[in-house]
Length: 133
Image (cartoon, rainbow, N blue to C red; front, side, top):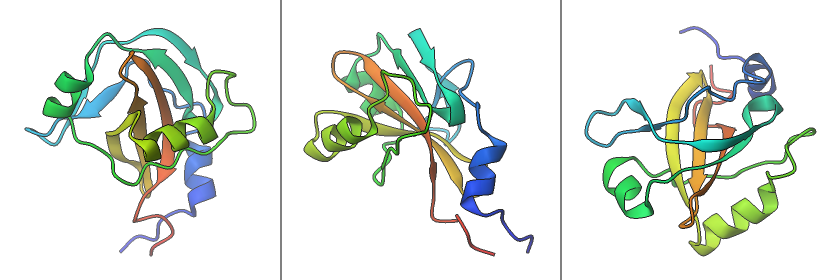
């Protein structure tokens, strides 16, 4: 088995990896599929803010939820990205987290949180493979 990179190194490899389009993992296929986005505010390290016109009802019927979402602040996060607020809202159920893509690099997932009003946030997060050899 090939050893995985430490989480910090893996995140550094994808620094600035805010996708040109946002994809969420479809329940039916298990594959990421692009969604409609607007008003992008990208930041370094895979952080970003945007809006989507898609309803939460449509998103939850079509795409995989992400149960262990834990956004973390980045050193140069865009002003729109408040990791503490997003995390609190996810815990309270006022926002939902979706799997953008699993293992965009080994041990790192892309996660997307969406609010009922269309505000949405994307970040990179270590997963259960992080740091395992």
